[in-house]
Image (spheres, rainbow, N blue to C red):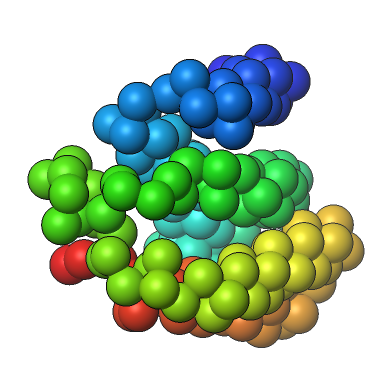
Length: 150
């Protein structure tokens, strides 16, 4: 999938969400899609960091760029009334909407760390990349631990 097409598609969907033209199920699908894209690329980077597959600077950097971009998108899909208590498809605890300041802080931390990972990835310094990958993974886990159903 072309990066530009992805950006345009997700941006259009975000605009529709903001305008109230999207059903709750679509908001859930939107945010889950963004997280799926992040996870897809993060998994490959993790395999490189763990030595499960050979490290490739270009591939890692490309995937880090995608994750950094996509990390800015999921918040559009967190519409009130789309928690796991309202929709079986949702994996988001209702607690998320009660703790929105914490959620926003964690999302900003994740965006900061994914951006740093993308920048460090361009250097090819595997030691620095592995260190930053760990920091980035912790920001993902922080939200999962508090706001995602198992």
